[in-house]
Length: 317
Image 1: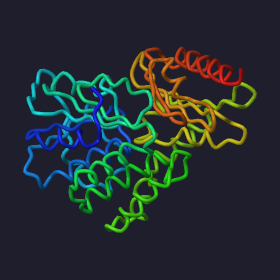
Image 2 (image 1 turned 90 degrees about the horizontal axis):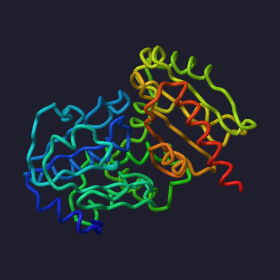
Image 3 (image 1 turned 180 degrees about the vertical axis):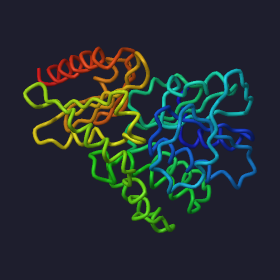
Image 4 (image 1 turned 90 degrees about the vertical axis):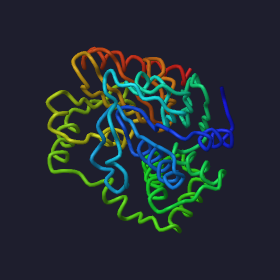
């Protein structure tokens, strides 16, 4: 059932025991929106737990509360008043869906969201789910503290490319300005966000060497195989090296996740990659999307390339 932002806030206010969660393969908006909401609520005497069925990336240390994250355990049952899932559709929260027994409130900005949760607030025009959390806090007159502001600002930066992508709106920048007034340190956030380990930088070089061009140079494809993945503690953002090639419209990174499982990340300058991702079982935004393909790397490569070319030809028809 679709709800208004006010109704979403009222559901949260009525709940005493809440679990927060988000999608596997977490990113800055995923974690920023989750922790931003947590910090806004932590003075309300609610019992709040954060569950995530994945490991956290190492470039989000500017946010307070990473130590609060727990992984769901097989056979565990958690009963609560409300499960709030952020920046995700219900099918991408892993074991959390099986462990937590509660109505689900879904806060998201992905245009591909299926809106099948018990309660859904989806704003595809929002630059990030962190922007939705910002609006929710304002709407409900909850208190911003520096911890919440820092997390929300990080989420905004993550999904807008530090306000460089086309999803950045005047409202996004107004929100960012207010967060800065609260005391957020943008230099500290960008420093931690972009900082990489030596092994990750070396891995980036090897990943760049795998880039190949297709479809008259309009598609750039990068491959992260098992060995390369294991040598890099963080591959977040690698796909942008391919996107930045002159003449490339769609960049795609296909990454080994497990035997017979490949993760796909797509970025574009003008093509709707959300529709392409949906055609292979994924979703996302018009300019940034992804999917999990249950094939090995080379099989997934062919599937993804064919889907991208088909999508580009459809748009140009």
